[in-house]
Length: 191
Image (cartoon, rainbow, N blue to C red; front, side):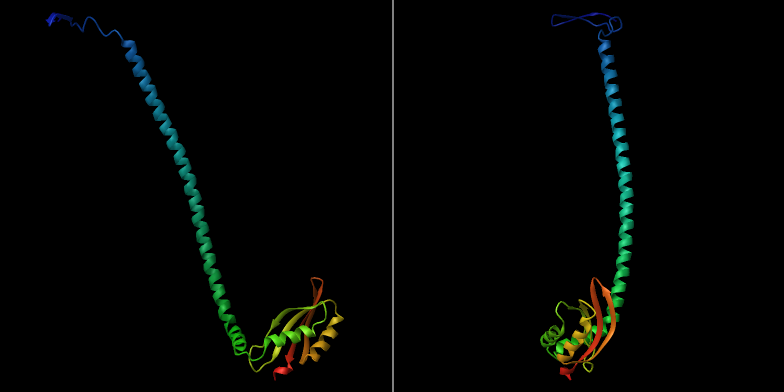
């Protein structure tokens, strides 16, 4: 199969069977290098995929925990809304009566509080005041903090001088270094 071919003055000898490729080593190293490179790329992709799957699993678990917390908070919100609505229904009538009393301006609150302040002994203060729930009743319930039990007599005397009557002491206790008195009284000037 060998022969000489002359063409344009060139002499070519073609004999592939007798003269094999001389740079086989280069092709083998290229093949081994490409195989190792491909193997390294596949290993890197597998590791990257495993890492991504691990993170995905962790995110799924945290997402599940957040969904459970969201459901818990939603049920707690519904429960609190029901409780608020129940309390609103329970206290709506007394609050509406008090608000209507305030809106009608049945008496001057400024004068009332000025008289109340004048009746309090020095160093004492008003903790709570519950106005009457109806127009017919002029009975106020209040809680006062006094410096000592001895000031209670002075408080009752001063309140009587300010036109408050039917003063009744309901409860006495000692809290936060103050003597606290809960009492009921009527405002004579409003009748």
